[in-house]
Image (cartoon, rainbow, N blue to C red; front, side, top):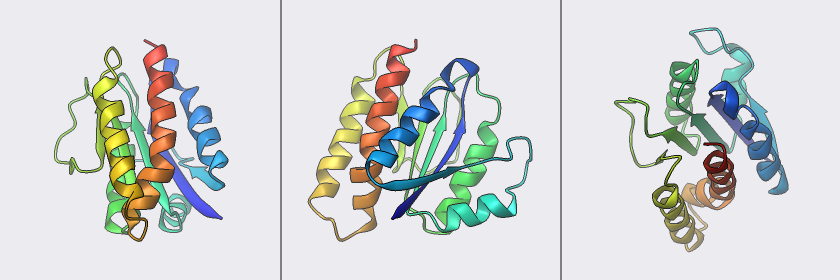
Length: 155
């Protein structure tokens, strides 16, 4: 069974999306784990191990969230360990110095651009299932589309 790690920093009104994201990943037969230590500025040992053994990292940061730096630190940790990942960030946040290749910026009032970008990544990756892009976008992309759909309804 493949494993997915979810790291999130959400506004209180968006907390429900984690269960939707988890459900979508479980439908793809993925075992899902997530951060448990939300208040620590460092990544605890259990979180490090869960990221390292994951086949996919999904990070989500919405506006008015409480711990975006923790998610960014975990995202960076996953990248350093070559864990394929997607980071979803609301475009109202000022997030700098992150590689834009696997980051989806979204606008809650106009999700079209973000959805199109995810669909393009899924389509491109589905033609080359031999590389790590496949797991990231074909398995994770569907979950990201579901996440964006839910966030768009929660304006």
